[in-house]
Length: 266
Image (cartoon, rainbow, N blue to C red; front, side, top):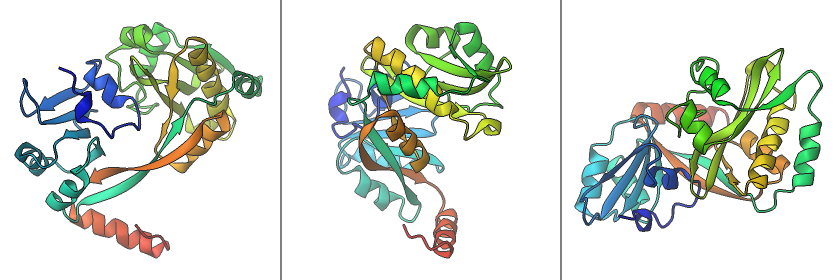
């Protein structure tokens, strides 16, 4: 059964598509044959995408049983109000930034790639390299390859590049997840090598390969720094939207207090 109609407003990234296509994550529905409510989960249950009829009793029951410290994306109308009603005072909106890849320019990307300092070199990811990186997750974000089962799965469905310094990987630009429509770009740089142009050059190499293979490299930024890098690479049409983080009232109140001390408001 095609569950995409239950997520009509979810256009921010390809994560929902990948889960619905069965490449990773889990799917919950209130009824296997005729679902009114559907929830897509990933990252060991830390990420939830809510879809379907938010006014259905199954939606209320699901939210009531939802544990704290969860990232929540909304895929249909009505869920935002229901989420705040069920978990009043426990929900924090977190801005994210969605981009279009339509204006990416190969000539611009090649110029950015060639700016990489001679002390580094770029390498397309191989199964052996990905296997090594997956086993060394204390050095890299645990969600770098979140949409892939193992190195072989990544090589079959994903694409990626790394920058090396003295034969050590210092930057990664790769698919975090993949579906039939494209990939979600994930870039990570080792802290010791920040501000060296590595994310720009490695990202440019990835995007060039994607464009050559007619793969859409989608960019969904979680912060302004990532958004700035996207625009430097040539992404356009920045669109801000809200993800929600569910946590206890004490932590929400503490966060609001600290933000006020810094002169910020929700």
